[in-house]
Image (cartoon, rainbow, N blue to C red; front, side, top):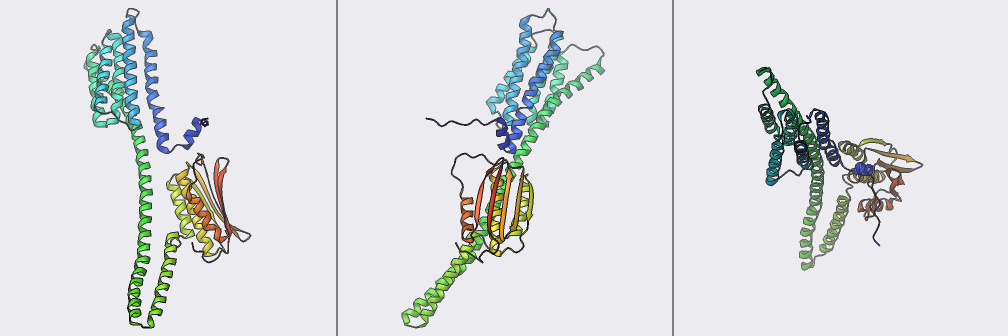
Amino acid sequence: MAAQRSPRPWAGRWSQADDVSRIVLYTRTSVVPALLVVVAAAWVGLWPQIPDTVPDAVVGALLAATLLQTVVSSVVIDRRVRDRPLQRRGHLTWAGLSAVAVLLCFTTAEGVRGPVLACVLALTVAPLGACGVRRWAPAAVLAAVFLTASSDAPEGGAPLVATFLVGFTALFSAAAGTVAVSLWIVDVVRRLARAEQDRARLAVAEERLRFARDLHDVVGRDLSAIAVTSDLVAELARRGRPEAVERAEEVRRIAQDSLREVRAVVRGYRGVDLATELEGSAALLESAGVRCTVDARTEGVSPAARTAVAWVVREGVTNVVRHSSATWARVEVAVREGRVEVLVENDRPAQETGAAPGTGLAGLAERLRPLEGTLTAGHEGDRFVLRAQLPAAAPAEVTA
């Protein structure tokens, strides 16, 4: 039997969506429907002014023109909002349908044609807001000139014609400008999201370079010493010299020291400082748009325990940034009854999907186990809470 999928309410989808998805959804549900509202309002005002002598077929043609151009403009704008712009064939289709809508407006007399044609031209110019001001501004002027020229010359001469031109240009510019501003906001959010991703990738690359440098410094130096000393041991052994045993012991000592240093590099103990980790975690959360509260009291905590706490804070904050849509987070470190207690909590955690958990928390629990520490993590209402406890006077070092 197929597994039943629990419905996810729209509110849940909104809370779990990232900033880019939210701004795209908001723009799609505001700009495009606004076109329908404007067109509907225009027809509500125009309908009583249509003379009874106008055939129903003509009225139908006018209504079809506005609806056609509304649908065409909505599709073009919606594709730009979703970052799926039209290709060449799509632009040709857009131009052809717009021309058909304009031609439909000329199937009736001037008294009714003007308002409908103005509405159709505004819908034609509006999507050009996605193409930059160098395109939509001339298009707005040309549309205003075309509308004024296709209408009967108003009484009042040149001043009134100029007023009509300015008014129509402002109307068409407002339509295109509104679309341009909306798409600009979406583009800014997308670029910020890409910048955050690039910064995260650069941070990972920098950490890899640091690890490579440390590993090279440790392994390269010690392996060179082992190679040279081993050659010396082989030469002394061939000659039957007793110093060979002493040199062999030196090779073993170098190998053991190198192993300890490699373990320290791999576990990151040489670069994890609690104060630095707390400061860096707060900066990371703030840069991700998460309000952060840090309260740390670590008097009397041994160096080994401070290192373990730093790892808990690092892993907890990393999970907040990577696996949630949090708006606030809290990090607390306190000493109570000889034990260090660490708390990392946040709102709006990622929903459980039944997938296998990651290795971060499992590895963190393994780090704490030799120090007699415990780790718990899970959902508590609408929060995700990570708790860790370990003795304040933890052993000096526990090797992996």
